[in-house]
Image 1 (spheres, helix red, strand yellow):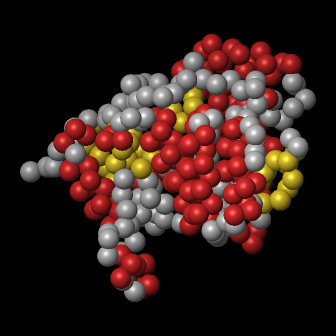
Image 2 (image 1 turned 90 degrees about the vertical axis):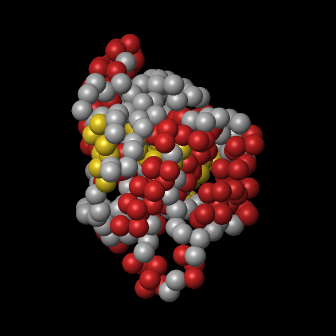
Length: 292
């Protein structure tokens, strides 16, 4: 998908037409008790069971949004009955169902990485964000298949010779399955989140690239971003903690073309709400007007 002609959400109560998902990946299986708090989990994850349940969820979504692809995955499952996750559900596999209505974030990312200039920019951005070495950047640049590179940027595990090495180049993104938190459709605009936890910051970065160069290619004016104020670095650590600007999609709900609900929570701060309000009202084309 290279344009946003079908992206227009003016209410969450209506017919579901298109959505972005991310199937459970190997990074989720790396959640260990010592990392529960940091990675925002309460317990270990049974990845095989999660994948079985998620596959059922995908079939249900395809049934209502893309019946032809629903039939495809059901037929394909019959050929791989013994597999926990048949190849048709894997975004990095040639047999992937590739629906235009049920879009996997990893698959969208792999499409971007086919373009050399974006490949270099994205790898540099992720490595810079993670504080990785130049050797890590070279390893990523040497990955041949864009599908394998997209998977590595999400799971943190790089493939060598077609096989997972088990070696982490950086931390996985076990929360990437919660795609609602990363960005919010506001009519024909997209409000990009600013993650509250460091564990989710790379998700925001990846979605920014997907939004700018795929979902809203050549229409960057449709993207609404929030960030810290320019003088944020001057504040003390205590003041920064109090005035942190964060917003996640789980606290945002589009209830009508002119009304958006945003709740304050542990993940969405008052400063984040204020920044989102000002940016949305500043752009009259969003269709949302300030109540007078």
